[in-house]
Image (tube, rainbow, N blue to C red):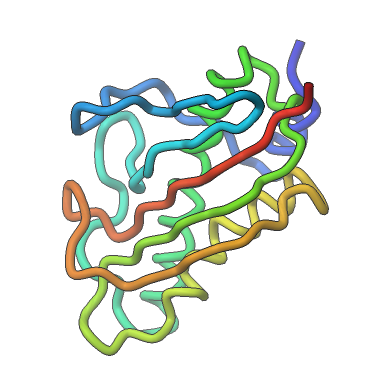
Length: 157
């Protein structure tokens, strides 16, 4: 049976990505009690980076970065579903997102870019999707991806 969260995802016209091999030697998530620490996910789909290079400081560039952040969020949800044994309805609250934007020095729109991930979590989890957050600019990311996002989530008992 499909979770209500996945039904909301489908209603938005979105789907979780296919499985992929991580680019480094790490766990996709670590659980401590009901808390799930999700490793950072870049904007890749089926192993290919979808948005590469620094995010341009233009309206179009920022919109492209938001789309990249949303793909990061979909990758996080894929791994979170594994941590929830296939049931995303077990999510109690999204505690924190950490967002990293590949950009040039002086880029001030990192928060607007990471909103692409934040808004998806709120759309899927409602009030429980609101979270504490960091959104920072960095000079490079794995695979020259434009965006990377990590998360901390608490599950229901």
